[in-house]
Amino acid sequence: MSGTSIKQVVNEAGIWITVFAIGFGSFYYFDSLSGVMTRVLEMGEEKYRMAKSQNAAVAKEADAEPDYSSYEERIQAGRNGHFFTTAEINGQDIEVLIDTGASAVALTYEDANAIGLFPTEQEFTIRLSTANGISLGAPAELDSVEIGDIEVRNVRAIVTQPGATSITLLGMSFIKKLERVELEGGELVLVQ
Image: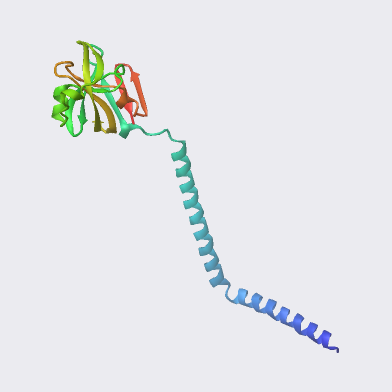
């Protein structure tokens, strides 16, 4: 026999011995291997169920409507149709009237003093048209304005002269920083 044919016979014999060993091992260890394979299949099914459950939860969350409840405040209209509420301005509770006709938050002089703002006479440079006629206001900036869970920071405001207004107006400098403001029946809905 030539060198090539002996190599070929040895290679074929090696292949047959390997096939026989695998077959004999499979037969001999069949019970052990079937237990291992069963456990591997169970683990695969468990991972598949978990992944399917997670994907369903993610899809359900993606399809769900946004939940505004923790950022929503509803204010009931008063007898005269106006919306009065208590706002926390720079940490102090202040009674306010929500007024979309006011361009900024307009603090009464007394409310401004209550939150620590004391404009000098020279600071009253802004002309205002109020229910009591024309008066002057002083520019201010509020650190925060809160109504319930809603908080707006860095709000432009105007302090009115003493006696010019009777209540603080929560105007557009606050309202524009909200995500949504709408009227539903007799309620004003504020959403951040």
